[in-house]
Amino acid sequence: MDEIVIEGGVALTGEIAISGSKNAVLPLMVAGLLSDEKLILRGTPRLADTQTLARVLRELGAEVEEFGQGPGEGLSVHTSDLSCTRAPYELVSKMRASFWVLGPLLARAQEAQVSLPGGCAIGTRPVDLYLKGLEAMGAQIEVENGYVNATAKGGLKGARIDLPFVSVGATHVLMMAATLAKGTTLITNAATEPEVVDVGKCLMAMGAKIEGLGTRNLSITGVDKLSGADHTVSRDRIEAGAFALAIAATHGDAHLTGIQEDVLGALAPAMRLAGCQLTQEGDAMRIVGPKGRAIATPVTTEPYPGFATDLQAPFMGLMCGADGVSRIRETIFENRFMHVQELVRLGADITLEGDTAIVTGVEQLQGAPVMATDLRASATLVIAGLMAKGQTRISRVYHLDRGYERIEEKLSGAGANIWRETV
Ligand code: UD1
Image (cartoon, rainbow, N blue to C red; front, side, top):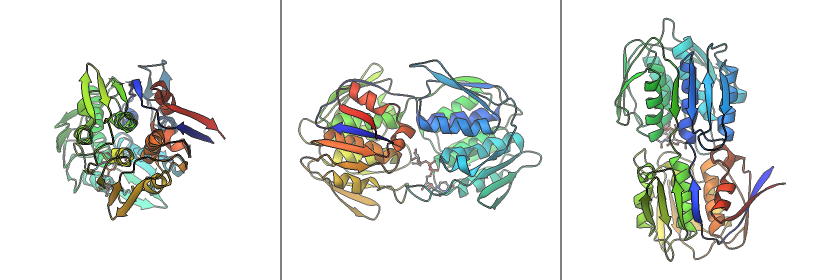
């Protein structure tokens, strides 16, 4: 098993190129099931999660091929025939996004058997909203032996779906399903995350009729058939945010290439309050860390455009060294503080009060062996390791590999003393 080793204390400089978005490429690949023509996705990141999803899609009859090398590389999904409509537990339990195939399978093949994804390290993560939405569109759904068995004899029908709260996953699945339903579907309280907009744009390039992308009200009028498309995946705002925080936390001065400030959303003002400078320079963002210690800054996670739950753990890394006490509140997931005890091992002073972490900044973190607990939590351990004095060794780095492309190469390119060891 691989471990990441960091000798902390080096300020990041130079340039870090931002990859294609993990949270966009996964639903985009799933959208490739909706058409019998080829969907070409450019600028895709090379991640363990894209490989896992490729296996699921192949199981269903899709041809998934990677092409090119280096920047601009991509992959294609070609599902000329849906030869299987069952997504088994062995694959879905590896990665939740596999569950999303339910929408396209039901829309195109009018039947699907998809394993329930189960819980996850950060919370219970139910899928009731997906199922209620599909039922509103006329699907018959039974949950039996851990599987969702769904049929839509005669096809899905347009419906009004009022989501009680914002769900990125439910919005992806219901939007995809609605593209091939008869009539118009109105989704209220839809997610407006940039990844939802990215998927919607790709579906429109495939011939879908969608109005209201990026707003809380989505209107989708079904068409008989979708075509292939050639789509470039948006850049990863979560990866960009994590690197911006790593630069700030090491008092560095470096550029993130390929992004605009708006993708950072609520992170940008929070970083400025914390004493960082962020400047757009062409297609790159220059991040300059605070001169002395960062200023303690409170954040609360919220659906987009609020502070992203995926950046909560990385932001906590910066706050561990801040001057003062910051309150970090998590409102999306009930158990997304697994990183706290690992940060404490590095010398952080953090206590939990319900959904809030109270972080009292310390002058200096100390290197230690730590364990990655989930994808975004592992990014904060890297940030904390870069800040710490001495050596930090992170185990279970498969969590990192799920969502960050060559993180140690990108960071060592910016001057960090970081490497991978196979132990
Ligand atoms: C969420 C984040 C997304 C992030 C991803 C991975 C939000 C709104 N979404 O997306 O930005 O990239 O985690 O960390 O911040 N829920 C239900 N029933 C459902 C579906 C969801 O109760 O059927 C609840 C979830 O438990 C959660 C909230 O709704 O509390 C948001 O869930 P959702 O957006 O669907 O989660 P993800 O798609 O995983």
